[in-house]
Image (cartoon, rainbow, N blue to C red; front, side, top):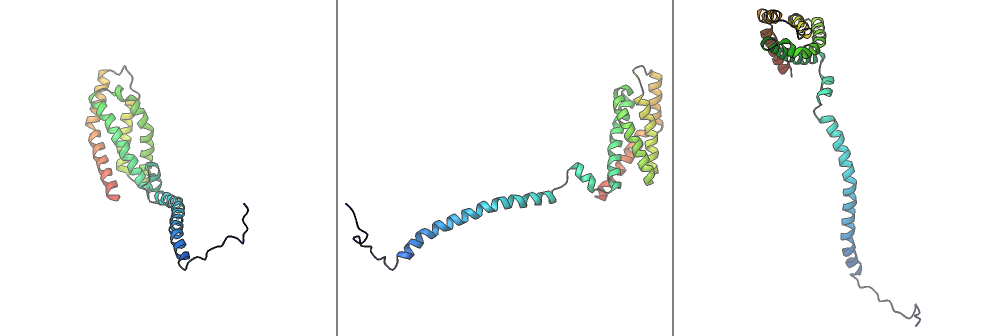
Length: 183
């Protein structure tokens, strides 16, 4: 059976036809339009979040040093060094110098560098303390297994007589408080 185009009558749409079709289609178009915007906003939001985080996050320890004034870096390094040196002095005064020989060796180069830096900044009191501390650290670092009891007793007596441990504690505490008030 063959139908001719002229043989099928096409009805005329009623006056509300366009409104009904538009009501069906517009909801779908609106949902599709919102979906497209959402997928465009996600990458944009990620990019914005990356840059906001990059510029507003608290810097990590290494990055933070770059933002600190040199005096604060020196103070922080001095406090850390004095804290580590205090542990070596305590061990030397109470147990045996040989137990902390490696730690004393490690502290020596830092001690020298800090002492010179403190002298150049005019902190002579702390530099003098580090000079005294360097002598003890040097002796502990070069102590051997055969360090006799008289030598150990003499080393402990020097630490006590000079009040080195107390001086280290006081200056460490003072520098720590100064650095906290400077922040």
